[in-house]
Length: 264
Length: 311
Image 1 (spheres, chains in turn blue, green):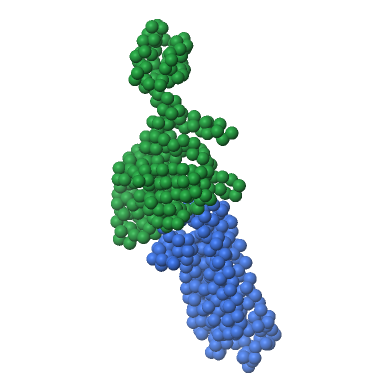
Image 2 (cartoon, rainbow over the protein chains, first blue to last red):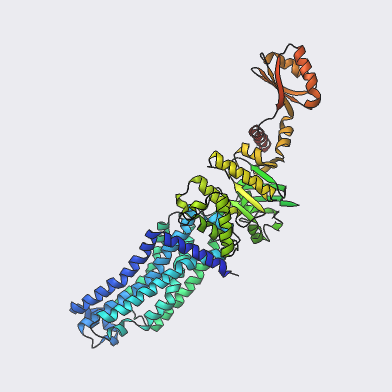
């Protein structure tokens, strides 16, 4: 049974440390906020200078909903769809950075033993650390996606473009898959943290997580599939299974005895 | 009633035995010194007693709770000062203390009240809002001790509590430890500072994987070295060794320039005969005093005996 009062105390401490660490805070906030701005700039440019080759991109060829669009609008939809997938990287990258500094950082500073000596369960400690890393990641992802959605309405050449970019599959991924990706990222970081002594090493190893998102990115670009509801739900289900498995492993690694006697 | 009881407590890491069949009974209100070389298994013992790691065999009760079946109650009733202070550098002194107090289940108001009390006690109040990262080693150590005390634990485990402190701060910590004993708390002190252990401890255990010896500092001395006297002479001591050695109550005698170290079975009874014998042998005695070996001497002797037994 998790006592949420203790979990809140852990989360409060984690966020207080984050607020005090300005470098980490800036590193966490700035790149994600640049992503929608960069994407919107690119889509805006597509509306001005479009390339006739865009019609030959496989994604354009396989999706009948894109027929009858002007070349500029087509270019904006294609690029909008590709880059909207990249927002799914944020819930992995941000929690990964936070969790690696939180767990490997505690390990390096040797603050884990006094923490483990407190009358809290390791589940409460793990849940506190996981939520402290996941919540900012998800909120920031949704904030960036909202900026992107609002900005897109302003930069498109045809009002139909936003409805074609924001496919239901993308929204499902954003709402359901984002928290799962964040949880996977943190679970993997916990597992890696037991073996490395540098937060950056933990971040780099957990970087393998971008592979499934890049598969979505290139799969859609190559016209292998369209990110519709079915793809979104299937992908989310797959992530759910992966999340359960990895959290189970992470919880086994994150045990008092394991941390004090085996973590190096 | 005992604050700590161990029965055949053991811990093995794969093929390595870290703690072997430790039996301890430490009464409430005792300052208990746990002495041993690096790698002796002291930290493992403390971790088991704080319910941080499980024993491979045996059992223990701390503050009345079983370390295996009532682990959380053990942690709630013990305070621990680890080798490193374990503080969050980015947080201020008061934020560190309030965080730990709240982990022990105190409300925000209670936590702030306790933190305030200890910050004032350790003369850190003026710097309560500064990040701990800028504190000196001594200040950090004081804060770590305050952290261990915040929840008013019945048993306190202190690992090198005065390490890195200046003499005045070390004295203040020692006085605090004595006052904690006076308030009924039990202190489990791990230290390499033998003079400190000698000053503070009611009971001392010398330990290297196994318990080598457990007794009061005075009894350890007597058991090892018997009781003795030091005789300061006006001339060389060496010529008198044979005369003293011939006395039936003398256990052993050594000479160092103008001083004789004599171990006796019962100094109060034997001293008059000893003095008479020395005077008759032509010795000019400047003075005679009880000879008490330092705890360091006792410790080294015990470690040597422990090694011999181990072999």
